Each structure stands twice: as structure tokens, then as C-alpha cells.
Length: 154
View 1 (tube, rainbow, N blue to C red):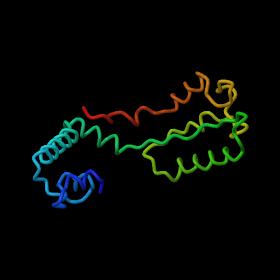
View 2: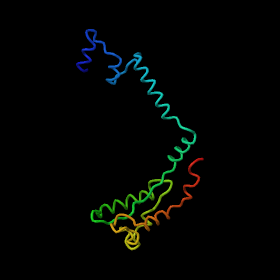
View 3: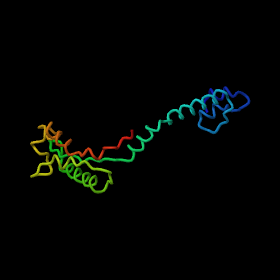
View 4: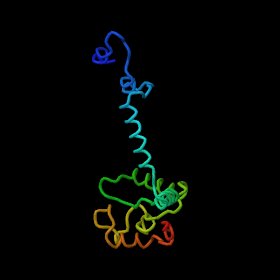
């Protein structure tokens, strides 16, 4: 209890409902200001949670379809063999263990056919990290849009 709270209590030693609330202890909301504040908070929560039927349907859809994407190869100076091993492990989990509704296998699209630990030189920007425009184009082409058709409710 703060010194100012002790002074406010005076000789009675009675703690106000507001002081109990601020201290995180149970309180009776008889104080008109507290009752009004609780009502305003309740109204805000109701408005925040209220949605149209379309918004609710869209939210249900977005939460029901999960799409995973594999990590593309990279081989710049800061990329270590250990990181490559982690990339392989994560991609294996994405493909086989994560139970995604759909997997976008960008690793398969971007890897060098002769060395799966590096990006295909034809598809990389030159920094050994980012795809070039043609690489991004092929990544986009690898996505079947039919998986997303009819997904958003009218």
C-alpha cells in the first residue's frame, strides 16, 4: 500500500473499492465511476467482437486453410553447412510432418538440379540469396490457383 493510500484512508483504515481494483484485488463496483467504466469496457468488447456474416465466414475460412512453403536454397558467405542441414530438416517437416492443407514447394522449383544445396544459377539474382525475376516467375507459376478458387465466400 502506498503512503498516499494510507493517508486517504485516514483513521478508519478502510480501503476504497477503487484502491482494491487498482491493487488487483476483488472489489464491489458500487462506485458510479467504476460501474460506468466497466459498462464502457463491456460495450467496447461487444463492438470489437461483432462482425457481419461475411466477415465471420471469411475468418472461418482463413483459419481453416493453412498453406506452408518450403525454404529455398541459399549459399552466400554467411550461410553455413549447419544452416543448410536445418533447411533440409525444416523442408522435410513442411512436406511430410506439418499437416498443411497445401504445400508450396519453392525449394523444388529453385534448387540446382546438380546440387540441391544451392539455388539454380539461372534463377538467382547473383547474391546467392534471392531469386531473379525469372526465378520469382517460376515460383509463381508453380502455384496452382485452383487450390484457392471458391475460397472466399461471397
